Length: 456
Image 1 (cartoon, rainbow, N blue to C red):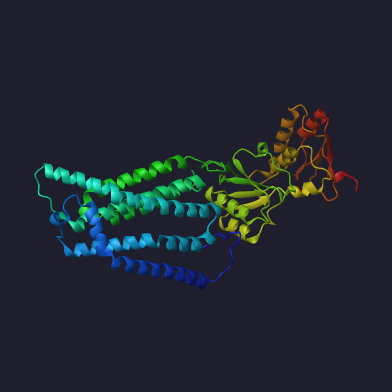
Image 2 (spheres, one colour):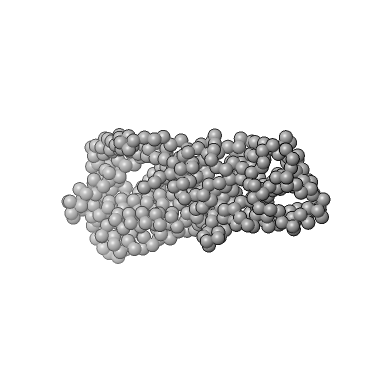
Protein backbone atom coordinates (compact mmCIF):
# COMPACT_ATOMS: atom_id res chain seq x y z
CA UNK A 1 0.00 0.00 0.00
CA UNK A 2 1.53 3.40 -0.99
CA UNK A 3 2.36 5.73 1.89
CA UNK A 4 3.00 9.45 1.99
CA UNK A 5 6.61 10.61 2.21
CA UNK A 6 7.30 13.36 4.72
CA UNK A 7 9.92 16.01 4.06
CA UNK A 8 12.56 14.44 6.30
CA UNK A 9 11.70 10.79 5.73
CA UNK A 10 14.68 8.49 5.35
CA UNK A 11 14.64 5.22 3.48
CA UNK A 12 15.01 2.41 6.01
CA UNK A 13 14.57 -1.34 5.58
CA UNK A 14 11.43 -2.84 7.07
CA UNK A 15 13.57 -4.96 9.37
CA UNK A 16 14.87 -1.83 11.09
CA UNK A 17 11.33 -0.67 11.85
CA UNK A 18 10.46 -4.07 13.32
CA UNK A 19 13.70 -4.08 15.32
CA UNK A 20 12.94 -0.64 16.74
CA UNK A 21 9.36 -1.66 17.52
CA UNK A 22 10.56 -4.84 19.24
CA UNK A 23 13.17 -2.96 21.28
CA UNK A 24 10.71 -0.33 22.49
CA UNK A 25 8.05 -2.97 23.12
CA UNK A 26 10.51 -5.04 25.14
CA UNK A 27 11.33 -2.02 27.30
CA UNK A 28 7.63 -1.39 27.95
CA UNK A 29 7.03 -5.07 28.73
CA UNK A 30 9.98 -5.14 31.12
CA UNK A 31 8.64 -2.04 32.87
CA UNK A 32 5.20 -3.64 33.22
CA UNK A 33 6.71 -6.83 34.63
CA UNK A 34 8.80 -4.95 37.19
CA UNK A 35 5.93 -2.73 38.31
CA UNK A 36 3.55 -5.71 38.41
CA UNK A 37 5.97 -7.58 40.67
CA UNK A 38 6.24 -4.51 42.89
CA UNK A 39 2.47 -4.15 43.26
CA UNK A 40 1.98 -7.92 43.61
CA UNK A 41 4.10 -7.90 46.76
CA UNK A 42 1.91 -5.14 48.19
CA UNK A 43 -1.46 -6.18 46.75
CA UNK A 44 -2.93 -7.63 49.97
CA UNK A 45 -1.95 -4.60 51.99
CA UNK A 46 -3.37 -2.26 49.35
CA UNK A 47 -6.63 -4.19 49.14
CA UNK A 48 -7.11 -4.11 52.90
CA UNK A 49 -6.38 -0.39 53.01
CA UNK A 50 -8.65 0.46 50.10
CA UNK A 51 -11.54 -1.73 51.30
CA UNK A 52 -11.40 0.00 54.66
CA UNK A 53 -11.90 3.28 52.78
CA UNK A 54 -14.80 2.34 50.51
CA UNK A 55 -16.66 -0.10 52.77
CA UNK A 56 -19.37 1.91 54.57
CA UNK A 57 -19.61 -0.47 57.53
CA UNK A 58 -17.40 -2.48 59.87
CA UNK A 59 -14.93 -4.12 57.53
CA UNK A 60 -14.67 -7.35 59.55
CA UNK A 61 -18.43 -7.79 59.99
CA UNK A 62 -20.09 -6.94 56.66
CA UNK A 63 -17.44 -8.01 54.12
CA UNK A 64 -17.40 -11.55 52.73
CA UNK A 65 -15.95 -13.32 49.68
CA UNK A 66 -18.58 -15.45 47.97
CA UNK A 67 -16.39 -16.47 45.02
CA UNK A 68 -12.65 -16.99 45.72
CA UNK A 69 -11.84 -17.17 41.99
CA UNK A 70 -13.51 -13.79 41.44
CA UNK A 71 -11.46 -12.36 44.29
CA UNK A 72 -8.24 -13.61 42.67
CA UNK A 73 -9.16 -12.19 39.26
CA UNK A 74 -10.09 -8.85 40.84
CA UNK A 75 -6.81 -8.82 42.71
CA UNK A 76 -4.88 -9.28 39.47
CA UNK A 77 -6.99 -6.64 37.76
CA UNK A 78 -5.96 -4.16 40.44
CA UNK A 79 -2.30 -5.15 40.04
CA UNK A 80 -2.51 -4.67 36.27
CA UNK A 81 -4.22 -1.30 36.62
CA UNK A 82 -1.61 -0.03 39.06
CA UNK A 83 1.25 -1.32 36.91
CA UNK A 84 -0.15 0.43 33.83
CA UNK A 85 -0.51 3.73 35.70
CA UNK A 86 2.98 3.41 37.14
CA UNK A 87 4.48 2.57 33.74
CA UNK A 88 2.56 5.30 31.92
CA UNK A 89 5.53 7.71 31.60
CA UNK A 90 7.65 5.02 29.95
CA UNK A 91 4.78 3.85 27.72
CA UNK A 92 3.96 7.37 26.54
CA UNK A 93 7.61 8.28 26.03
CA UNK A 94 8.34 5.21 23.93
CA UNK A 95 5.13 5.58 21.93
CA UNK A 96 5.87 9.23 21.18
CA UNK A 97 9.45 8.49 20.11
CA UNK A 98 8.35 5.65 17.83
CA UNK A 99 5.38 7.41 16.22
CA UNK A 100 6.58 11.03 15.88
CA UNK A 101 8.90 10.58 12.86
CA UNK A 102 5.99 9.32 10.76
CA UNK A 103 3.49 12.01 11.75
CA UNK A 104 2.63 15.26 10.03
CA UNK A 105 3.08 18.51 12.04
CA UNK A 106 -0.46 18.83 13.41
CA UNK A 107 -0.61 15.09 14.11
CA UNK A 108 2.63 15.35 16.09
CA UNK A 109 1.26 18.32 18.03
CA UNK A 110 -1.97 16.40 18.71
CA UNK A 111 -0.06 13.39 20.05
CA UNK A 112 2.02 15.46 22.46
CA UNK A 113 -0.95 17.41 23.80
CA UNK A 114 -3.00 14.23 24.07
CA UNK A 115 -0.28 12.49 26.09
CA UNK A 116 0.15 15.49 28.38
CA UNK A 117 -3.53 16.11 29.08
CA UNK A 118 -4.52 12.46 29.49
CA UNK A 119 -1.60 11.70 31.81
CA UNK A 120 -2.56 14.49 34.19
CA UNK A 121 -6.35 14.47 33.98
CA UNK A 122 -6.62 10.67 33.82
CA UNK A 123 -4.73 10.08 37.07
CA UNK A 124 -6.59 12.93 38.76
CA UNK A 125 -10.01 11.66 37.66
CA UNK A 126 -9.37 8.07 38.76
CA UNK A 127 -8.00 9.24 42.12
CA UNK A 128 -10.99 11.49 42.85
CA UNK A 129 -13.43 8.79 41.77
CA UNK A 130 -11.94 5.92 43.74
CA UNK A 131 -11.08 7.78 46.94
CA UNK A 132 -13.79 10.44 47.20
CA UNK A 133 -16.81 9.89 44.94
CA UNK A 134 -17.32 6.11 45.28
CA UNK A 135 -16.92 5.97 49.10
CA UNK A 136 -19.67 8.60 49.40
CA UNK A 137 -21.92 6.71 46.98
CA UNK A 138 -21.39 3.40 48.81
CA UNK A 139 -22.06 5.10 52.15
CA UNK A 140 -25.32 6.52 50.82
CA UNK A 141 -26.40 3.09 49.54
CA UNK A 142 -25.49 1.45 52.84
CA UNK A 143 -27.56 3.99 54.73
CA UNK A 144 -30.55 3.18 52.51
CA UNK A 145 -30.12 -0.52 53.33
CA UNK A 146 -30.10 0.18 57.05
CA UNK A 147 -33.19 2.37 56.72
CA UNK A 148 -34.97 -0.52 55.00
CA UNK A 149 -34.04 -2.89 57.83
CA UNK A 150 -31.68 -5.03 55.74
CA UNK A 151 -28.62 -6.76 57.14
CA UNK A 152 -25.64 -5.61 55.07
CA UNK A 153 -23.37 -8.28 53.59
CA UNK A 154 -21.10 -7.12 50.76
CA UNK A 155 -19.06 -9.25 48.39
CA UNK A 156 -15.53 -7.81 48.52
CA UNK A 157 -14.65 -9.09 45.03
CA UNK A 158 -17.79 -7.64 43.47
CA UNK A 159 -17.31 -4.32 45.25
CA UNK A 160 -13.78 -4.02 43.92
CA UNK A 161 -14.85 -5.14 40.45
CA UNK A 162 -17.50 -2.43 40.30
CA UNK A 163 -14.98 0.15 41.51
CA UNK A 164 -12.35 -0.81 38.94
CA UNK A 165 -14.93 -1.02 36.15
CA UNK A 166 -16.20 2.48 36.90
CA UNK A 167 -12.62 3.76 36.91
CA UNK A 168 -11.86 2.12 33.53
CA UNK A 169 -15.10 3.39 31.99
CA UNK A 170 -14.45 6.94 33.18
CA UNK A 171 -10.89 6.77 31.90
CA UNK A 172 -11.92 5.55 28.44
CA UNK A 173 -14.58 8.23 28.07
CA UNK A 174 -12.11 10.87 29.23
CA UNK A 175 -9.49 9.68 26.71
CA UNK A 176 -12.03 9.84 23.88
CA UNK A 177 -13.21 13.33 24.84
CA UNK A 178 -9.64 14.64 25.16
CA UNK A 179 -8.66 13.04 21.83
CA UNK A 180 -11.55 14.79 20.06
CA UNK A 181 -11.08 18.13 21.84
CA UNK A 182 -7.33 18.27 21.20
CA UNK A 183 -7.90 17.28 17.56
CA UNK A 184 -10.32 20.16 17.19
CA UNK A 185 -8.01 22.69 18.83
CA UNK A 186 -4.98 21.63 16.76
CA UNK A 187 -6.96 21.73 13.51
CA UNK A 188 -7.01 17.99 12.80
CA UNK A 189 -10.76 17.73 13.36
CA UNK A 190 -12.59 19.86 10.78
CA UNK A 191 -15.60 19.54 8.53
CA UNK A 192 -13.34 17.66 6.09
CA UNK A 193 -12.21 15.03 8.63
CA UNK A 194 -15.20 14.83 11.00
CA UNK A 195 -16.48 11.54 9.54
CA UNK A 196 -13.03 9.96 9.88
CA UNK A 197 -12.77 10.93 13.56
CA UNK A 198 -16.38 10.09 14.36
CA UNK A 199 -16.09 6.55 12.98
CA UNK A 200 -12.85 5.70 14.76
CA UNK A 201 -13.44 7.35 18.12
CA UNK A 202 -16.97 6.00 18.49
CA UNK A 203 -15.92 2.59 17.20
CA UNK A 204 -12.99 2.11 19.57
CA UNK A 205 -14.72 3.65 22.58
CA UNK A 206 -18.01 1.80 22.32
CA UNK A 207 -16.31 -1.50 21.49
CA UNK A 208 -13.99 -1.29 24.49
CA UNK A 209 -16.83 -0.27 26.81
CA UNK A 210 -18.83 -3.30 25.69
CA UNK A 211 -15.89 -5.57 26.50
CA UNK A 212 -14.90 -3.96 29.80
CA UNK A 213 -18.30 -3.76 31.49
CA UNK A 214 -18.91 -7.23 33.02
CA UNK A 215 -22.03 -9.32 32.55
CA UNK A 216 -23.06 -8.63 36.14
CA UNK A 217 -23.52 -4.97 35.13
CA UNK A 218 -25.23 -5.68 31.82
CA UNK A 219 -28.22 -3.66 32.95
CA UNK A 220 -26.25 -0.43 32.79
CA UNK A 221 -24.10 -1.38 29.79
CA UNK A 222 -26.38 0.10 27.13
CA UNK A 223 -27.03 3.23 29.18
CA UNK A 224 -23.29 3.74 29.71
CA UNK A 225 -22.53 3.26 26.01
CA UNK A 226 -25.29 5.68 25.00
CA UNK A 227 -24.06 8.34 27.44
CA UNK A 228 -20.46 7.86 26.30
CA UNK A 229 -21.47 8.33 22.66
CA UNK A 230 -23.45 11.44 23.61
CA UNK A 231 -20.54 13.04 25.51
CA UNK A 232 -18.12 12.41 22.65
CA UNK A 233 -20.58 13.71 20.05
CA UNK A 234 -21.21 16.89 22.05
CA UNK A 235 -17.45 17.48 22.14
CA UNK A 236 -17.03 16.70 18.45
CA UNK A 237 -19.98 18.68 17.09
CA UNK A 238 -18.54 22.26 17.41
CA UNK A 239 -15.44 21.29 15.42
CA UNK A 240 -17.31 19.24 12.81
CA UNK A 241 -18.80 22.42 11.33
CA UNK A 242 -15.47 24.27 11.23
CA UNK A 243 -13.28 24.48 8.12
CA UNK A 244 -10.10 24.52 10.21
CA UNK A 245 -7.42 27.10 11.01
CA UNK A 246 -6.67 27.73 7.31
CA UNK A 247 -10.29 28.24 6.27
CA UNK A 248 -10.18 26.50 2.91
CA UNK A 249 -12.83 24.99 0.70
CA UNK A 250 -16.05 23.82 2.23
CA UNK A 251 -16.86 20.16 1.83
CA UNK A 252 -18.27 19.45 -1.64
CA UNK A 253 -17.18 22.78 -3.15
CA UNK A 254 -14.80 23.28 -6.06
CA UNK A 255 -14.82 23.71 -9.84
CA UNK A 256 -16.38 21.33 -12.37
CA UNK A 257 -14.09 20.48 -15.27
CA UNK A 258 -15.12 19.64 -18.85
CA UNK A 259 -15.95 16.07 -17.83
CA UNK A 260 -18.12 17.13 -14.89
CA UNK A 261 -15.59 16.05 -12.24
CA UNK A 262 -15.24 18.17 -9.11
CA UNK A 263 -11.80 19.76 -8.92
CA UNK A 264 -10.65 21.15 -5.58
CA UNK A 265 -7.79 23.52 -6.38
CA UNK A 266 -5.26 25.03 -4.00
CA UNK A 267 -3.12 28.01 -5.04
CA UNK A 268 0.19 27.94 -3.17
CA UNK A 269 1.48 31.47 -2.68
CA UNK A 270 5.12 30.51 -2.20
CA UNK A 271 7.33 33.59 -2.11
CA UNK A 272 10.42 31.54 -3.09
CA UNK A 273 12.45 32.89 -0.14
CA UNK A 274 11.11 36.41 -0.65
CA UNK A 275 11.72 36.67 -4.41
CA UNK A 276 8.06 36.51 -5.50
CA UNK A 277 5.68 39.28 -4.39
CA UNK A 278 2.75 38.19 -2.28
CA UNK A 279 -0.35 37.19 -4.23
CA UNK A 280 -3.36 39.28 -3.13
CA UNK A 281 -6.34 37.31 -1.86
CA UNK A 282 -8.58 39.23 -4.26
CA UNK A 283 -7.15 37.40 -7.29
CA UNK A 284 -7.95 33.90 -6.00
CA UNK A 285 -10.77 32.56 -8.22
CA UNK A 286 -14.07 31.54 -6.71
CA UNK A 287 -14.22 27.83 -5.94
CA UNK A 288 -10.52 27.60 -5.10
CA UNK A 289 -8.48 28.25 -1.96
CA UNK A 290 -5.08 29.69 -1.10
CA UNK A 291 -2.13 28.60 1.01
CA UNK A 292 0.86 30.75 1.96
CA UNK A 293 4.45 29.55 2.23
CA UNK A 294 7.83 31.25 2.40
CA UNK A 295 10.01 28.63 0.72
CA UNK A 296 8.69 25.14 0.04
CA UNK A 297 11.95 24.01 -1.51
CA UNK A 298 14.02 24.75 1.61
CA UNK A 299 11.55 24.36 4.50
CA UNK A 300 10.63 20.78 5.51
CA UNK A 301 8.03 22.07 7.98
CA UNK A 302 6.20 24.07 5.30
CA UNK A 303 6.20 21.07 2.96
CA UNK A 304 4.69 18.83 5.63
CA UNK A 305 2.07 21.46 6.52
CA UNK A 306 1.08 21.74 2.87
CA UNK A 307 0.92 17.96 2.46
CA UNK A 308 -1.24 17.69 5.56
CA UNK A 309 -3.70 20.28 4.28
CA UNK A 310 -3.82 18.74 0.80
CA UNK A 311 -4.65 15.36 2.31
CA UNK A 312 -7.18 16.57 4.90
CA UNK A 313 -9.11 18.89 2.54
CA UNK A 314 -8.97 16.37 -0.32
CA UNK A 315 -7.54 18.70 -2.93
CA UNK A 316 -7.29 17.47 -6.50
CA UNK A 317 -4.97 20.17 -7.87
CA UNK A 318 -2.01 22.10 -6.50
CA UNK A 319 -0.81 25.17 -8.40
CA UNK A 320 2.44 26.78 -7.25
CA UNK A 321 2.50 30.53 -7.89
CA UNK A 322 6.25 30.99 -8.15
CA UNK A 323 7.18 28.01 -10.35
CA UNK A 324 5.61 25.11 -12.23
CA UNK A 325 6.14 22.61 -9.41
CA UNK A 326 9.13 20.79 -10.89
CA UNK A 327 11.71 22.30 -8.46
CA UNK A 328 9.87 20.83 -5.46
CA UNK A 329 11.73 18.03 -3.62
CA UNK A 330 11.03 14.48 -4.73
CA UNK A 331 9.33 13.41 -1.48
CA UNK A 332 6.64 16.07 -1.84
CA UNK A 333 6.08 15.40 -5.54
CA UNK A 334 5.86 11.67 -4.86
CA UNK A 335 3.32 12.21 -2.08
CA UNK A 336 1.23 14.35 -4.43
CA UNK A 337 1.38 11.56 -7.01
CA UNK A 338 0.20 9.04 -4.39
CA UNK A 339 -2.74 11.33 -3.57
CA UNK A 340 -3.46 11.71 -7.33
CA UNK A 341 -2.80 15.46 -7.18
CA UNK A 342 -2.36 17.42 -10.41
CA UNK A 343 0.75 19.55 -9.84
CA UNK A 344 1.34 22.69 -11.93
CA UNK A 345 2.16 26.36 -11.47
CA UNK A 346 1.98 29.95 -12.67
CA UNK A 347 5.75 30.38 -13.18
CA UNK A 348 5.71 33.86 -11.66
CA UNK A 349 9.51 33.77 -11.35
CA UNK A 350 9.81 34.06 -15.13
CA UNK A 351 7.91 37.34 -15.19
CA UNK A 352 10.02 38.61 -12.30
CA UNK A 353 13.24 37.89 -14.20
CA UNK A 354 11.86 40.01 -17.06
CA UNK A 355 11.48 43.01 -14.75
CA UNK A 356 14.34 45.29 -13.73
CA UNK A 357 11.85 46.93 -11.34
CA UNK A 358 8.85 45.33 -9.55
CA UNK A 359 5.42 45.54 -11.14
CA UNK A 360 3.38 48.57 -10.15
CA UNK A 361 0.43 46.30 -9.37
CA UNK A 362 1.34 42.60 -8.87
CA UNK A 363 -2.36 41.72 -8.65
CA UNK A 364 -2.76 42.42 -12.39
CA UNK A 365 0.12 40.11 -13.25
CA UNK A 366 -1.16 37.28 -11.07
CA UNK A 367 -4.74 37.65 -12.31
CA UNK A 368 -3.73 37.52 -15.98
CA UNK A 369 -1.57 34.47 -15.26
CA UNK A 370 -4.46 32.74 -13.46
CA UNK A 371 -6.75 33.53 -16.38
CA UNK A 372 -4.32 31.67 -18.65
CA UNK A 373 -4.54 28.41 -16.67
CA UNK A 374 -6.18 25.71 -18.78
CA UNK A 375 -6.67 22.87 -16.33
CA UNK A 376 -9.50 22.57 -15.32
CA UNK A 377 -10.51 25.75 -17.16
CA UNK A 378 -10.92 25.58 -20.95
CA UNK A 379 -8.10 26.59 -23.31
CA UNK A 380 -10.39 28.44 -25.72
CA UNK A 381 -11.65 30.67 -22.89
CA UNK A 382 -8.27 32.13 -21.90
CA UNK A 383 -8.65 35.41 -23.76
CA UNK A 384 -12.27 35.75 -22.64
CA UNK A 385 -11.24 35.41 -19.00
CA UNK A 386 -8.48 37.96 -19.52
CA UNK A 387 -11.02 40.27 -21.15
CA UNK A 388 -13.18 40.06 -18.01
CA UNK A 389 -10.15 40.98 -15.89
CA UNK A 390 -9.32 43.95 -18.10
CA UNK A 391 -12.94 45.12 -18.06
CA UNK A 392 -12.85 45.09 -14.27
CA UNK A 393 -9.67 47.17 -14.38
CA UNK A 394 -11.26 49.57 -16.85
CA UNK A 395 -14.18 50.22 -14.53
CA UNK A 396 -11.79 51.24 -11.72
CA UNK A 397 -10.99 54.60 -13.43
CA UNK A 398 -7.49 53.50 -14.41
CA UNK A 399 -6.20 53.51 -10.82
CA UNK A 400 -4.06 50.47 -11.49
CA UNK A 401 -0.84 51.57 -13.20
CA UNK A 402 -1.40 49.78 -16.52
CA UNK A 403 -0.04 51.35 -19.72
CA UNK A 404 1.21 48.49 -21.94
CA UNK A 405 -0.07 44.96 -22.58
CA UNK A 406 2.12 42.35 -24.29
CA UNK A 407 0.84 39.09 -25.71
CA UNK A 408 2.06 36.17 -27.81
CA UNK A 409 0.41 33.38 -29.80
CA UNK A 410 3.39 31.02 -29.62
CA UNK A 411 3.11 30.00 -25.98
CA UNK A 412 2.20 31.04 -22.46
CA UNK A 413 5.76 31.80 -21.33
CA UNK A 414 7.29 35.26 -21.55
CA UNK A 415 9.53 35.35 -24.62
CA UNK A 416 13.24 35.44 -23.95
CA UNK A 417 14.67 38.94 -24.03
CA UNK A 418 11.42 40.76 -23.25
CA UNK A 419 11.93 43.50 -20.65
CA UNK A 420 8.89 44.73 -18.73
CA UNK A 421 8.65 48.13 -17.09
CA UNK A 422 6.62 48.52 -13.85
CA UNK A 423 3.48 49.52 -15.81
CA UNK A 424 3.91 46.86 -18.50
CA UNK A 425 2.22 43.46 -18.23
CA UNK A 426 2.30 40.24 -20.23
CA UNK A 427 -0.88 38.31 -21.06
CA UNK A 428 -0.02 34.59 -21.18
CA UNK A 429 -1.84 32.45 -23.72
CA UNK A 430 -1.33 30.79 -27.08
CA UNK A 431 -4.41 32.12 -28.88
CA UNK A 432 -4.95 35.38 -30.70
CA UNK A 433 -6.22 38.43 -28.89
CA UNK A 434 -9.84 39.04 -29.80
CA UNK A 435 -11.25 42.31 -31.06
CA UNK A 436 -12.97 43.08 -27.77
CA UNK A 437 -9.61 43.26 -26.00
CA UNK A 438 -8.23 45.50 -28.74
CA UNK A 439 -11.22 47.85 -28.49
CA UNK A 440 -11.01 47.94 -24.70
CA UNK A 441 -7.28 48.72 -24.84
CA UNK A 442 -7.89 51.52 -27.33
CA UNK A 443 -10.65 53.03 -25.18
CA UNK A 444 -8.44 53.07 -22.09
CA UNK A 445 -5.26 54.21 -23.79
CA UNK A 446 -3.43 50.94 -23.26
CA UNK A 447 -0.77 50.05 -25.79
CA UNK A 448 -1.36 46.49 -27.04
CA UNK A 449 1.81 44.87 -28.39
CA UNK A 450 2.17 41.55 -30.21
CA UNK A 451 5.54 40.21 -29.04
CA UNK A 452 5.77 37.89 -32.06
CA UNK A 453 5.92 40.90 -34.40
CA UNK A 454 8.48 42.84 -32.39
CA UNK A 455 11.80 43.38 -34.10
CA UNK A 456 14.72 41.68 -32.41
